Amino acid sequence: QVQLVESGGGLVKPGGSLRLSCAASGFSFSDYNMNWIRQAPGKGLEWVSSIRGRGSTIYYADSVKGRFTISRDNAKNSLYLQINSLRAEDTAVYYCARPRLGWYFDLWGRGTLVTVSS
Amino acid sequence: DIQMTQSPSTLSASVGDRVTITCRASQSISRWLAWYQQKPGKAPKLLIYEASTLESGVPSRFSGSGSGTEFTLTISSLQPDDFATYYCQQYNTYWTFGQGTKVEIK
Image 1 (cartoon, each protein chain N blue to C red):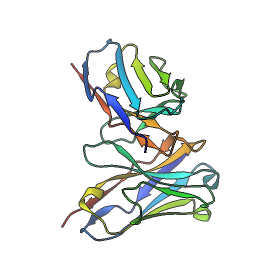
Image 2 (cartoon, chains in turn brown, red):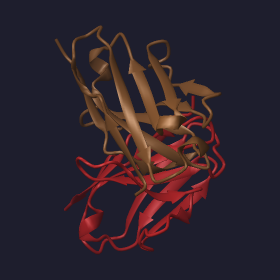
Image 3 (cartoon, rainbow over the protein chains, first blue to last red):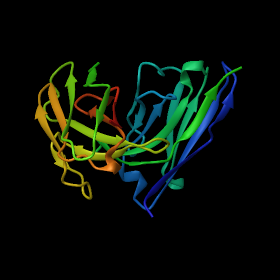
Image 4 (spheres, chains in turn green, red):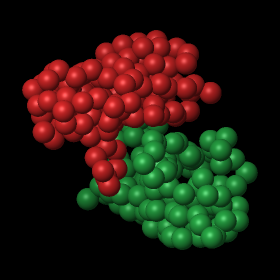
């Protein structure tokens, strides 16, 4: 079954860190760029980060640059997002998403909720 | 950065209505635009890509048009399952989403 399953979210204090994971199955993971996209409660979608299939090229949104690190382990069919120096405005559901041809997102996970609060 | 602006933010309509949502880009994005539907508590679902190409399995009442900086998503006859929030997304330069349009029951 083709799917993405995120995990690792939770309640974290401001300034804290968290590592999100996304387990992929049912497709050739290493052939695809992968992305993280987030959605704050009641708000719209915000692209966060992208990594090429072999991990050679990485992009970040300006809002997370320097605090978030995307990585992948193709042997484990897994995508990761290390998020540091968390702020209240990072509170969101974080989705793992696969882009078709590298551009528009045809496969999404269910998301994992990150809540930053003291 | 390319900004995407959708209008309206909220749209009230009845079953059977023709509904049109507009998405404007801050600079030309050719036809590199996708539309998504999202229901509460669910991940977005791809409806249309390359401005007007219908994703497999999406009902033909959905259609997209436009190029450059102005795009539209049209639902020809609104069905009960279509009440949701719709997002446009450019993929000309990185990825940017519009702020969303909520289609609610009138």
